Length: 128
Length: 255
Image 1: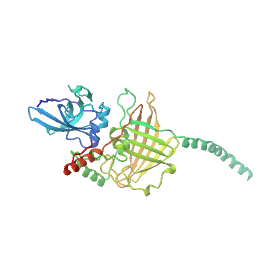
Image 2 (image 1 turned 90 degrees about the vertical axis):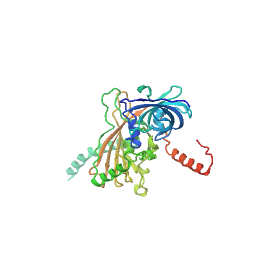
Image 3 (image 1 turned 180 degrees about the horizontal axis):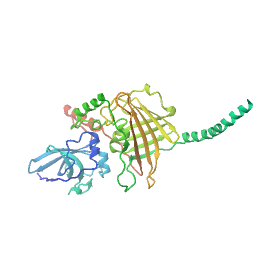
Image 4 (image 1 turned 120 degrees about the vertical axis):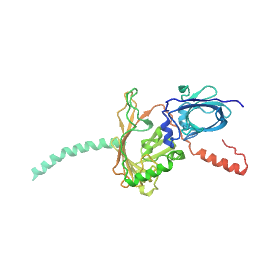
């Protein structure tokens, strides 16, 4: 099985759209003060409102290989950031930028992503 | 006496004449009101202007103790969780839909007898029934956005909303006795000509508010903008279908 890197980059970057996330439910469990980049293989993706859902197969040294579920911005907001249908699909490898869980568990809130072709939705490179 | 009558007539005459002149002016304004149709987003002010104005101006929510307790109860059962009206695809309701709507744009479609306000978030729709199109609000069930009757006063659209539901799950909690008055008008355009729509809002609630909530909300027009639909409930149904098919041992053919 191919290894996938989990790159963690802490920044003091708060997405301007985080307030929209908060509008739908409490976002207290997410640390919007940090940016974490995660690369993994798409197991399931659902671009929906009020929040997208993405399950990636991720491997890192600390916890090995496992499926991690993420949520993220609404389909409408992702579309306005550049998301197009069929940009990627199951089995593709993508990199996402997330606000990680405050409690250190797997998961987080997706604020941007990079497709296998290098297309970006949101500002993934801003944290690189 | 004739002199007296004459003096009365000459005294009234200017008012009669000016009144006759005013009637057509008022009628013209009422029969040819401004068109608020278009896509609108929260006011950001002139491009490059330092320190834009706030989302809305003024507005302090002073709840009576019982209402404050109701709000705290709601917070205590939802804080730190994924539970929330929006997460369940339920719109904010008035006045939240008008004052916030999650930062999403809104679209207005205007007909002489009705004005539709479509908030993109949750596909929340308000129908503002104008003049005779409005019926007796008491004949309708309470809803989160209430029942809105409207009329023109010159270039301003006055909207009275009643039949609201009691809402603790709102940034602006209120009882079902709350009433909301909105006054829509075009404000000063931006320097590049972008139109600005404003609404003065007053929410009165004899049960939950110590004093009326008074605020002004502004929007600026979005040109060449594509307001989207907001499909939200389908995933819940798809999850239900998936369970049904799994329990039946059948393959679900739907994406």
